[in-house]
Image 1: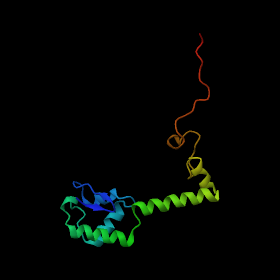
Image 2: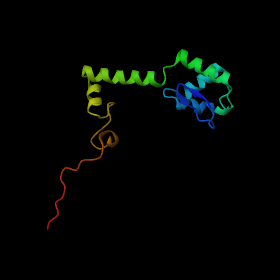
Image 3: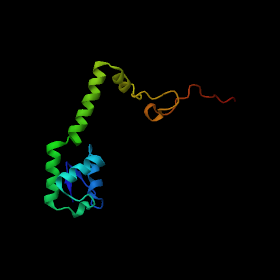
Length: 124
């Protein structure tokens, strides 16, 4: 069982895909890490030796911000935008899309379910 950065990697997956379970690592970063460690990307996670796992851990400690450190940085960045009151900060505060998307007809996931203005009253 391979545990890297507090995450248990799924044993049946290839190591290339298994590393993507760590927050902040996608497929391309995963491939770069495996090239540096000189590990075959088609190898299963359960087939890794303890030495190979330690190699991956060392590479991640040296170069990458992952998991808690990365999450903390992103929340601080959002908080900074909200505090200075810039446009993007206001959009974050109101929970609206920030990158110029239309909101008249779309953005239902961000805005929530439609609130119907007038509810019909049954005539008795």
